[in-house]
Length: 112
Length: 115
Image (cartoon, rainbow over all chains, first blue to last red; front, side):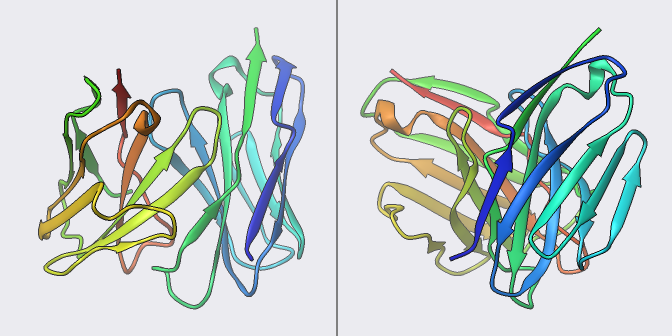
């Protein structure tokens, strides 16, 4: 059964203090691994898709990396506006309509 | 990304009443819509997949007679929570399936509170 585990559950950082969020996954045939940002009371906002081990993607202060067992979301010199819940999700199979399995998220809080 | 709206954004109702949540795609046509539910500090869980003009497909453990889904047009899908109870209080989010997009995009969500 496909499974996604995110750690830590919550992370508090000082502004400018870089860190990484972890997403461990087990899936029968990875089609894609996704990272989303979710603000309180809102729907998830798409950040990245990673398709194969070794792939990396960057967007502003965020960089996502992928291995065969896990993905990391690195945040460099974070700002208070980066505070949110970050969700990791995986999709197996061959169709973009396949079911997506989400992790429970990491709640990131950046103190000024 | 795709633009999806949901209405209402928040709703409070009494136990036993029914609540309808609308999900509209504003600048595209979606033949398939996914409906998710998210409890506080928990993961998004897929409830059902609705297809325009046909019956929805429900995930295991989701009661199809309680969560009625209608996808009558390519721009509107609705989820009706019938005879709502406090345990149905949750955040309901829709997501259209778009063939040429790399991932799923999500609506802003509807917060349901059943008293």
